[in-house]
Length: 108
Image (cartoon, rainbow, N blue to C red; front, side, top):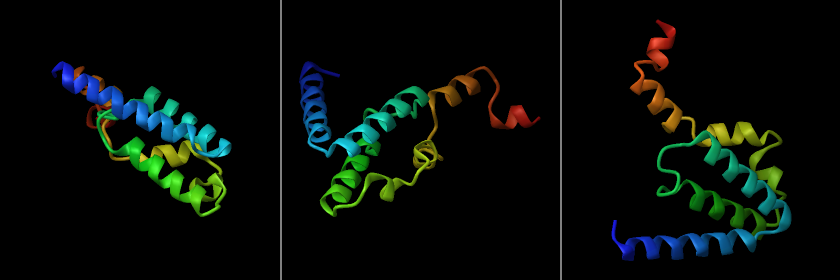
């Protein structure tokens, strides 16, 4: 990764953060909690993939339609998050597999 890529990545992230800050307060709070949850759970490629930008698009559209954020995602924010990353590998999964564990070994 060259310096140009790093600079471009920072520009994109700053633009993303500006969009988040432009959300209505309730949407922004929920978005930031979801983002924090994802950074803790660690789906692989979260910084490079479409998950956060797609979520932001979804929230912007919901806000534009005048919907309450919980109308979009339901009352259980953690369940919504888990469903979004249900099939995505996490860093914990990769670590477990590297140790010879994982879902198949745990059932064994």
